[in-house]
Structures are given as structure tokens and as C-alpha cells.
Length: 89
View 1 (cartoon, one colour):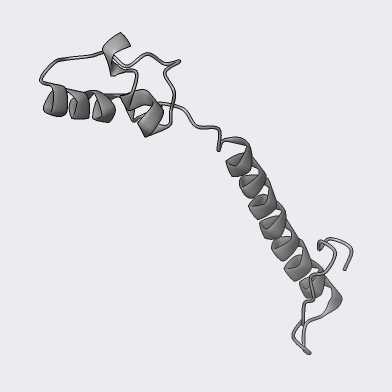
View 2 (cartoon, one colour; view 1 turned 90 degrees about the vertical axis):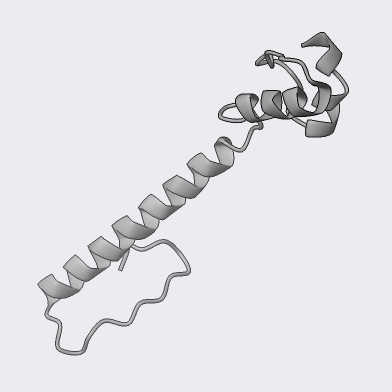
């Protein structure tokens, strides 16, 4: 079962012939490979950005400070740090 990642143990049905066993191993191996790729992509995308959050933060500033701001893309993504810089937005 070389199509499976190391450390994966798989029990095949007793009545599976060699072609069925190969198909099962290939399908499970491909699924596990895709999961690993998705996890790696998610880990790489964990860098904090303002994507989809700028408008919400600007709305909070409007509610709290009664003024409209445009949150720059290079503003700190930590809410506490960004709140301390709203006078510069």
C-alpha cells in the first residue's frame, strides 16, 4: 500500500480482489493527499489581512467616534493596535 502516507493503517475487505484493493487504496490516498494540501494552503493563508474586515472595522469607528474613515490596507490587523491609530485613517 505505497499510495498511502506513512503511518496510515488501512483494513481492506476480505473479499476485495487486487483491483478493488488498489482502487480503494488509491482513492483513500488521494483523499488524504488532498487534505494535506488543503491544510498546508490554510496554514500559508493564516497571515492576518484586512480582507473582508475593513468595512466592519470602519463601521465600528463610525459608531464609536461618529465619523467616517477609510481603513488602509497596511493598517495593523490587530484590533487594539488599529483602534489606537484611527486618528490617522
